Amino acid sequence: MEYRILGGSGLKVPVLSFGAGTFGGGNEFFDAWGATSDVAEARRIVDICLEAGVTLFDTADVYSNGRSEEVLGKALEGRRDKALISTKATFRLGDGPNDVGSSRYHLHRSIEDSLRRLGTDYVDIYHLHGFDALTPIEEVQDTLNTFVREGKVRYIACSNFSGWHLMKSLAVADRYGWTRYIAHQVYYSLVGRDYEWELMPLALDQKVGALVWSPLGWGRLTGKLRRGKPVPEVSRLHKTAEMGPKMPDEYLYKVVDALDAVAAETGKTVPQIALNWLLQRPTVSSLIIGARNEEQLRQNLGAVGWNLTPVQVAALDKASEVPAAYPYWHQKQFPERNPWTV
Image 1 (cartoon, one colour):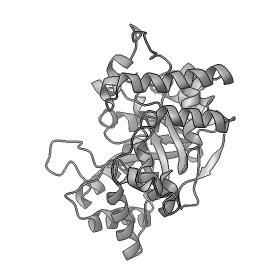
Image 2 (cartoon, one colour):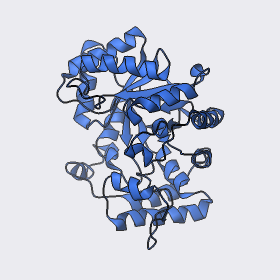
Image 3 (cartoon, helix red, strand yellow):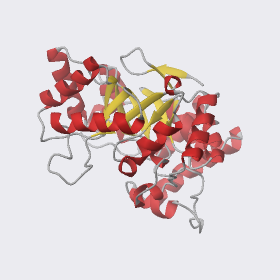
Image 4 (cartoon, helix red, strand yellow):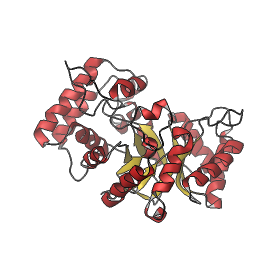
């Protein structure tokens, strides 16, 4: 397994990490991804990950209403020191007016509840799951900095922020000398390249590592969707593909055609190629892969230990390119002054 420094920190993370959103079951969203509440099965998945060097496990308080954290904690019993745990807060978990957001009140309750469910006294990476526009950024960053000083959290990160959300948060942290975000958990895939427009240049400038969620484009790049063929009768894609951002069928099939061509050249699977392409992109520190069983996990692990050629990368780049929004299309015309826009 290859390890990379995460953002501007000294923490090394594996280039593949495991998304424990499939642990716990309990609601329609995660059931659609093949979630399981079986601790024994989760422990077996964790065994395979640790044997392969996949030491980072990502979860969140809202995943299956806390059950994901509980199952992950039980699966890691006796070997907490062998793993890095990432969890998140901000989204609603409860019916009360303060059971949502990034206020000091909610985050304090959230971290204590997460630690209890995980069966640990610290979290390695603590994410804000989304931006809270109603809570002052100073309050948010001060609270997260306190968690680090108390030893409950080792590093802080965010997820699903826009460029100005992230930059303002970093600026506030810098102003007061507080701990700053070292990572941004983002949606990025061959069929979802919006991250490249503003967030990637920002991450390069500010040394914020990308932890990529849904690297297979909401299941669209698993190799099961192809031009002129129906979705397999028994497939989670009937649900998961509808959950993600919409895209024209022709665009998707153009990307899949390019993946098929590279698969024929390399002998690798479509998912392995899609994951390997991401690992060659700037700022990407780790891809969060999920798996509902051992076979799927081992296939995803085959995405590392080799690299696509520059020609193959260029072919995939071309097939997946989409017109940029303003002002990014304008900036791309001046690469001499904006080198990260090309």
